[in-house]
Length: 449
Image (cartoon, rainbow, N blue to C red):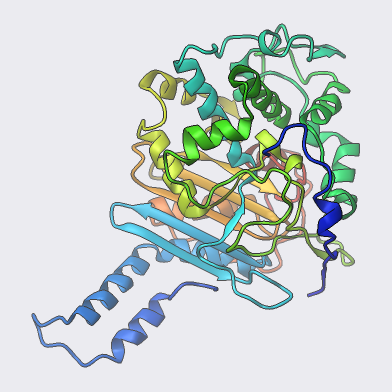
C-alpha cells in the first residue's frame, strides 16, 4: 500500500492569522483477557481472588460489546486503515480500536485517539444558539438579516427571509458551499494537498454559496448546507461580541470538562494522542492509479463553525449524554432541538439527527473530513452512547456505520465483510444520504455492493 505524504513547512503553514484570533491497536481483546486469566492458579468455588475478579470483569465487558467490536473490525476488513470506538452505558466505559493508525510506521490505531469530528461540530453550535435564546439574547425566529444585515443578498438569496432556525435545521435553501465544483476541486479533492494550509475566512465560504441560486425557498424543503452553520457561527459572534470558539469553550467544553475537545484556530496538526488520516482525494477511489495520501494536517479555518472541532470518542459521549439529559438546555430549548424535519436518511432537528434502529431510536450526528469519518449517538434518555471514527474515507459503506449502531444498541451482529465491496456505486440517492449524514462533499461513502 503506497502512501503519499507531503512534507510539512510549519513556518509557512501557520502564517496568516484568521480574521479573529482563536479558531495501539485493539485494546485487550476478550481472547487476551481469557488468556491472562488462564495463567492464574485455579480458584476454588466461592474463593475468587482480586486478580481473577478483574479478569472476569474485563471479559464480561468485552462480551457485552462483542458485536460492536466485530462491526468496527469490518471497516478494516473492507480496506479502511483503522477505527477507534468508545461506548458508555450503565456498566461503565468500553474503549477499543482496530487496524492501523499510521501506515508509514505501522503503529496501531489507539483506543484514546483524538480526531477531527467535522460536522459533529454542528450540535455544539446549535446548543450555543439555543442557550442564547433561553437567555433572551436572540430568537431562533429572528432573520439572518437581523444579525448580519445585508450579507445574504443576490442571485435569489435574501437574508430577510431566512431564519436562524432554518439555518440550524437545513431548511434555509442556501447553497452548500462545499458542493461548489470549483471549491471542491481546490480544497477537498485534487487541490487539497496544495491548498490545505491556506487560511480561508468564513466570508469566503459565504461568497462561494452566494454565487449559486438557493436550492429552494426558505422553509419549503431540506438540503444539508454547511453554509448555514458558517452563518450560525457568525451570528454567535455578533450576539456575544466574542468569537464562536470562546462561546463553545465557555458554555460546553469547560462546564463538561471535555479535556480532549478543542477548536484548532490557526493550528494545522492534530493534538496527541492521535492517528493519521488518509484519503485518495478523488470521487472515484477504486481507480487503479488512485493513491492513498496522508491528509491529517489542515488549517483550522477550513472547517470553522460548520466542522472544525477536534475531540475524542469519550468526550463526544459525555457531551451527547449531558445534552439529552437536559444538562445543557432547558426543557423548552431541548424540545426545540428535537423537533425534526424529514431528511434523506432520517429526521433532522437543530444540529441533531434522529435515527430509528431495529430496537430503539438514537440521537446524534455524523462528521466527515478529509480522511476522517465519525459518528456519535445516544439513546434519548442519555444513558447509553457510542462514538467512533475511521481514518480513511474511501472504503467504508454507509451501511457499515448503521451496522455499528445496530451492534451496540441492539446487539445485532453485522453481516460478513466483503473485501471487494469498495467499488463505488453511482447511486445519487445513497451519495446524498452520505452527505447528509457526514456533511462531506467527497461523496465516496455510498451504499456499496
